[in-house]
Length: 79
Image 1 (cartoon, one colour):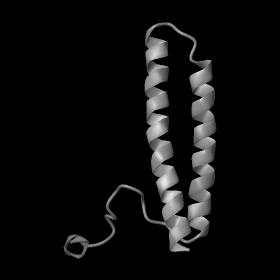
Image 2 (image 1 turned 120 degrees about the horizontal axis):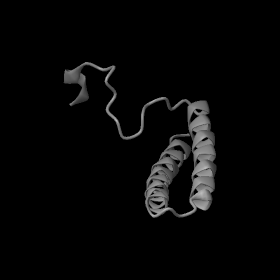
Image 3 (image 1 turned 120 degrees about the vertical axis):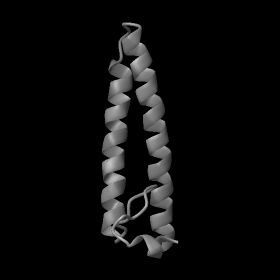
């Protein structure tokens, strides 16, 4: 199970990076009065895929945030 969770977490991280790049491209298109429908459609598809991956990850029991420290734990326990 841990291997599946790790694969999903890697996919989520890669997808977030790709989403950030797509958002940047969309901002450039908007800034130059271009048509951003293609970028927006891709971004919406990526968000749907991300939601599916997050749901699958939660189903497997992984509830920890990705890339963020767990602030619910006391500071001395995070070391």
